[in-house]
Length: 319
Image (cartoon, rainbow, N blue to C red; front, side):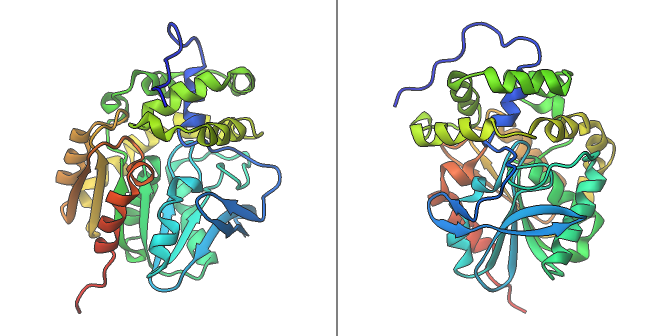
């Protein structure tokens, strides 16, 4: 499969925002399917959190591990970890409020509100304490949990995590333009419907290092999900709340005392590896693993390299 060709010329106006809709091909859905079909078929469960319907997977038994997707993402980001980790752990993978198959209410979507939501999600599952794993902005959420509720976080896994100074550290011009755009939701929604498969391919190659992984099936899934209703307002709210992250949890990263694993793709074009190494220096009880030939989703691109690292980190500690 040939590397997808970039769109000719600069991407105009609000349309860079749409690339965030495609980062992991998530979207809203007015009806939640009974099954999650990826590399395996798993039953999709739902429950109410803060009065809103949340979709999630819950497999395995043992110490709980909760997997959290990033901005514009959904649970399929972790499709190569759900089965492997559930052989020794209870593994919960959710679509966050405002993402994927979960409800998308009108809400502020501030970092504080998302941390409060996440705590209530754990309460609803009767989970007092868990290992939390987050990719990209999902890493920001789980760091917020470790800072606000350290007693509830056993271990922390940050994959392509969120640093402080996000705008300054973004390496991809396309992602940077998307984060800095200030278009109204209706314009972005309209553009989202009319931009075609070529845009999908161009966007996905920003986060995936190996273009051979962008198979027709992956692109079809991305295109279908991109056009489900309700996606844009929560996405724009999250982007516009980035200053609240900078003014709040980002300033406290060095206070994290939870044992932490940091995994980074060596070819990450969103946040380059030096950003991960800086995060490693800020989080004192952390280890850093660089994954060759992987971009911003190393757990999806290189599960054969990432999964053994995860399993080793999750091994029971000697008491």
